Length: 348
Image 1 (cartoon, helix red, strand yellow):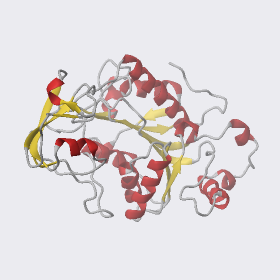
Image 2 (image 1 turned 90 degrees about the horizontal axis):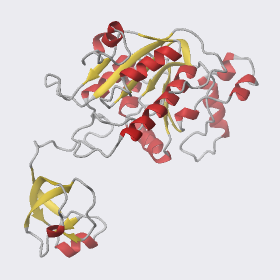
Image 3 (image 1 turned 90 degrees about the vertical axis):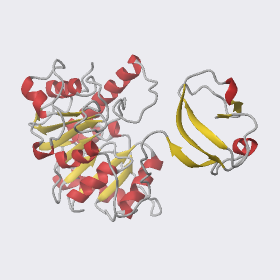
Image 4 (image 1 turned 30 degrees about the vertical axis):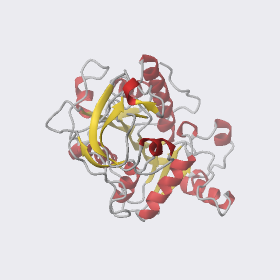
């Protein structure tokens, strides 16, 4: 963060963003020779020296934004509403959760889709919501408590490890009750320390979830506003490899006849249409219609899907001025049969 020399409290200032992220804190704005973008004008509440010494506080107020005014919604009507983009709201309706379902949200934080799914299932059933970060899992629990959604069980869990190892699956008692998600959670409640806010669960047995929502980490090329994206081709390849691992686990954990919804907030076809093609080629999954929840465009041609398959997935493109949404992708599968227990993740 930099600022011009001689700034005092109550001075009118212009606020820029450093597009290259290479200016050091406390430097003089006059020495900045990289790319920058004007985002607002305002009035300082501190002198320049105070701004750089303060750990927290309000430095500039009375902002006049260059972009259209969009008021922050964080904390508005807490416990009553959760604001989402249109495509994110569509996903829960595509999943079509029912009362009493056992559902897995593999990458649940910050919790918008999770809480929407729980609401649509009328808070009746089991919704396991995983995130690899303990902090995010705890924040998700707080969100669900605020919204009075007690069917949600947040877990600190890396979902690529959510499937129990084969040796533990093979030695488990041959009882549907023992291997059910409800019983796994019940045993975890008995073994987890009473003061812990998150259950300690090692994993789940194959084919025990009715529905799975997989919104994995992605390149996020559909998010907006986005002033800069630092990724490269190697970075994109890392995402696709990770997404394939998530799909492998999802295919194992889903019951035959169950529903899998795969979504991303990117416009990259390698993570979208090509990932759907990969799933269809390697697992007993079938694309199905998204019905009235299909509000976006069809999938891109020439990315491995037939014309019929492309019509079953939906893509939200920021270039579509009629919808005016962020970039997003969504596909809905039905599992048509079991998977061999010795099948390993398909490699690129």
